[in-house]
Image 1 (cartoon, rainbow, N blue to C red):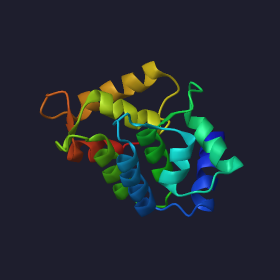
Image 2 (tube, rainbow, N blue to C red):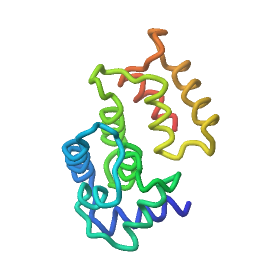
Image 3 (cartoon, rainbow, N blue to C red):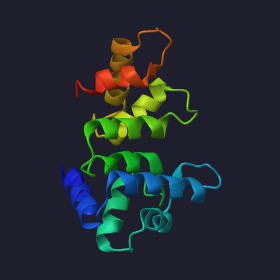
Length: 159
């Protein structure tokens, strides 16, 4: 609950909308020359175009799980996306687009785990993985171990 409250205040105080999160993601892609998928605090402020502050540092630290000084960029984008006031459909499209890196129109178990984790859908890694398996088994019509965007939308509406 503290995380949600902090993210809500951060998004509101910095006027974050879905479009600004999309732009932040594009800025991150340009900054992430090594394709590491992680950013430090300076990049965090630069990508989101926010001034360093106590509030920004607190949000950053919430995602720096191992105190490495680095956070997973996609996880942050998904989390912030939930507080932009965008429609549920727009949020789903953005989440799917972020993790469908190869632009295949489908998502693997691992990619789904990342979305669930970013959305705080479970307390432990095992629980997140179990939820991903359940989701894929319920909506993977082609039995190919991946879900399409349409299948993702159907299952997302259950949450």
